[in-house]
Amino acid sequence: MRFMIIVKSTPQSEAGDMPKQELLEAMGKFNEELVAAGIMLAGEGLQPSSKGAARVHFKGNKRTVVDGPFAEAKELVAGFWIWQCKSFEEALEWVKRCPNPHDEEGELEIRQIFELDDFGSELTPELRASEERLRTELESRQK
Amino acid sequence: MRFMMLMIPKGYESAAPDAMPSAEAVAAMMRYNESLKKAGVLLALDGLHPPSTGARVTFPGGKPQVTDGPFSEVKEVLGGYWMIQVRSREEAIEWAKRCPASPNETIEIRQVQELADFPPDLQKAATGYAEMQPHARKAS
Image (tube, rainbow over all chains, first blue to last red):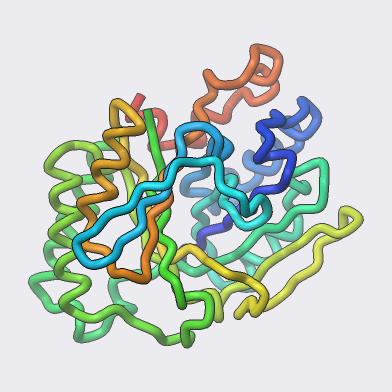
């Protein structure tokens, strides 16, 4: 099963403070362990919401664009990993071993990713085939 | 430039563990996903189970502390994401506007940090980071 590990923003990360070399080294080591254990599938950091950010709200056919930065400094996504784990507990154990991603109090959120089998009969065979085609093509592009 | 489109569905913070979208919603979203793929901008996408099945780990005083979902004090949560490769922030916003989203949904657009965004000493400390990013390696 796959999990998304969400690194929540902090006032410092939203202020655009770059991580210190010490933290980058600790995080690099942690990532090496994740890769060696076959856990890590992807991981990225996001720019603070003051750079290259916007929100699009939907109401009927109307689209309203609100430019960043956003006020919710502790509720935003600052980064994420995608992990392949045998269980929720395994994901949780790895998260607990993660170096604190910020120089201040921070939070990581663990969320399980939907797989095709989770959708049941609502996902018709045609929809399933089209979704599988999409994913196969995306994977082949990355090779 | 890579951008993440973060899908934030209002109400998902209190959704039941077995909450599912309707077949019509899935079909409409698949047509949108196909259009992203045909345009060559789609790098990755995923949907997340409700936060009632998740957990949050905080680090008070540097020690991990686990809170199981649902997270009652939280106003908004992530329902899924797209990772796209586009030429500008404006192009990313245009793609978000075309999404067949519902009135309770918001899409947040955020630029992804590339290694080149870091100063040289930090790039050195982050050696090996690029190899861990299959999406970045092939897209850039």
